[in-house]
Amino acid sequence: MMAHKLSKQTGAETLAPNGRIPTHAIVIGSSIAGLAAAQTTANYMDQVTIIDRDESACKQDFRSGVPQARHAHTLMPHGQEILEQLFPGLIAELISNGAVPVNIEKEVAFFHAGSWRSPKQKDRKLSLSCSRPMLENAIYRRVSRLPNVTIMRGYRAEGLVTDASGQQVAGVRLRFGRGARARELVKEANLVIDASGRQSQAPNWLASLRFMPPEEWRINAHVGYATRIYQQPANFAASWKRLYVRPTPPDDTRGAIILPEEDGRWVVTLVGIAGDYPPTNEAGFLAFARSLPTPQIYDAIKDAHPLSDPFGFRRTENRMRRYDKLPRYLEGFLVIGDAVCALNPVYAQGMTAAITGSHVLAAVLNRYRNHLAAGNVAGLAASFQTALREGLDDLWSQSTSKDWHWPMTEVTDNAEALPVFI
Ligand SMILES: Cc1cc2nc3c(=O)[nH]c(=O)nc-3n(C[C@H](O)[C@H](O)[C@H](O)COP(=O)(O)OP(=O)(O)OC[C@H]3O[C@@H](n4cnc5c(N)ncnc54)[C@H](O)[C@@H]3O)c2cc1C
Image (cartoon, rainbow, N blue to C red; front, top):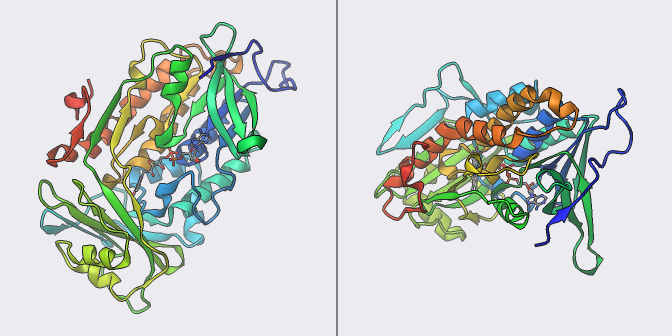
């Protein structure tokens, strides 16, 4: 891959009100991490541009850039709290649009290690249930209304460009369209935030500019999902609104989730760990549900009307890219969300980790506020990645510690030191 260098400082054309050159940030990815990062960054930079390779915005349907969105997504109360701070009024808006409020202590049934337990959440009793597209779309609408944010859809980020010194990011190389009609361009910026998820190419981009890519830790418990949407039966009566059956190591490899969504739907996800993947054909899906250690899931869905086929997903390993330990940073280039820390979805911490990233980002950008206004980003990348690692310690430990107990779990290289960071 070619390394590109630019000598100009910014792509913005008109001067800011006080006569200085306007500052510009690019965020790659318009999903949870990218939208939250853009909302935060818009408070500190004159202009923010969000780039996404998907042509369509999220709307109420699924888009190819976020294939995991078809599967059950629980937003943990801590993530919900940070999201509400970032987007005041979001929870009420979602409820008024059909999201289902769930009382965590009274309306969640949780089966684990052979018995039913009630989740305890001190001071946090309300949790929302809605489809992942509904959540993302509500955030998307808010961010797209910000006067200094532009969203460019259908553009794929393909690399980074640096300034003349080669030490600082100066923009992103983009491709629009496909095949012979594809167009390449460079969008300049003082600050670039990669929020492109598990498929992030940032390590390759850094390597092509002669920066050391991050060390990578992977803990793979070989988890597979199969998910089907159902219409909740009109006469269905149970004390729970959400039902979780969590697999228990080392032998009890099967689990499942039922979450209520808008429009009276259920999202039903079957989970298999240690390579015991749930089938995606109709008969196999029901047989797997029937084989669970408790009959509640099968009983709930056996007569319910399916609204979709079952969809599978297997890219679920815990992966931490140690951007906090780089020997040298490309100044002004930050990485956030699944692009840094992707977690086994069984523990439902991924969106909370992505949102936590923007919380950390706000604190770091605030510290650099005066430097940023002058387009000076020196030291920002190292400070952010270190603070982010600290902010994600607990979530990483929670998501990885149980995975060590599955016999098939693969652990790469020096990840043995987990679950505690060194
Ligand atoms: C099966 C499954 C179930 C899950 N369940 C839960 C759950 O219950 N609770 C929970 O909290 N988390 C869950 N997660 C995790 C959650 O989905 C992720 O943690 C979260 O979506 C991460 O957000 P992100 O913005 O970092 O990345 P993503 O959501 O993956 O978004 C990446 C974005 O970048 C764009 N993009 C990618 N490459 C480029 C490029 N080169 N140029 C431009 N744009 C690009 C994509 O189009 C996309 O919009 C689950 C994950 C899986 C796999």
